[in-house]
Amino acid sequence: MLRARYLLRRLAQAVVTLIAVTALLFGLLHAIPGGPLRNLIGEAVGADPAAAERAEALLGLDRPPLERYLGWVGGLLVGELGASWVVAPGRPVGPLLLTALGNTLLLTGSALLLALLLGGLVGVASALRPGSALDLGLGLGSLLLGGAPTFWLGMLLLIAFAVELAWLPAGGAQTIGRDDPLDRLRYLVLPVVTLAAVQVAAWGRYVRAALLEELGREHLRTARAKGLSEAVVLVRHAAPNALAPLVALLSLEAPALVAGATVTEAVFSYPGLGRLLLTALRAYDWPLVQGIALILAVAVIGASLAAEVVVALANPRLRA
Image (spheres, rainbow, N blue to C red):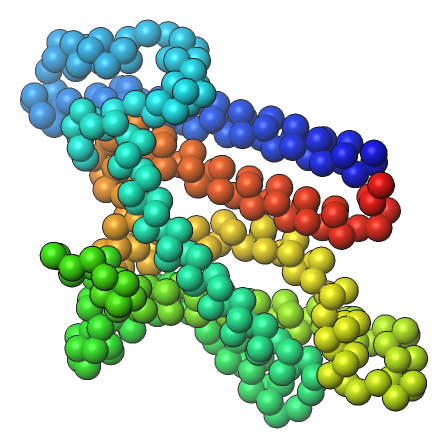
């Protein structure tokens, strides 16, 4: 019963947060001086105020802000995100976002899995031999790699493996006319490695800190005194107890992963949400910007909620 109340309360908080995000997002975009369409229309028709007013009336931008916001939210409830103004004039925003979202999920999901795997190995190796040359070397490598800007690392890999060695394609998602997994994989290698590299450094430090804290607990000293090997102590006792804080950290890393994906997609011309967002911003395509920003907000809120649910289910005090 306690667990059900806790989960319902967290779900209600997530819904309230999402509503606040939609209001803030809509308000910021439509509070731009001159209106959301004024700059674009001004460039196209020589800053003719009458032309701008006609265009705003055609798109419903002459209505009161509250009415426009409620209309936008009402459209969201039935899956309508509006139509693109400039990037794909007249086309519904939803299908455009779904295509880009699929590419971004493939990129970020692959990068996250790679980062968790390599970061976990680095963290375990460091935790098992704290203070050793291996631990110091991995720590220094993590510090240098974690501090490298994503765009700089991406450009470095691009120059080395796409330009100089010509082993991998420089950008895009697939070769025109081909639609096989191996071709997609070749285009994913560089952006995935770029996005995962910084995450590997972070997860290595997280795993090391969590395991060292668990390995130093009194009940694990007792387990060792009973003759259990270090591998058994690590796998059966330390690792399960260290998972809860790592799951919570996973939700905090979601915004960093999304931000890194935006930069990575721009560097490698990868057709995901980040690159589409930059294109929409340059084109003053506010319906498209609103849709992308909303998806990113839902991803961050959803990751946070999922982490809290997992931690709550693992908490004995909330088991009922």
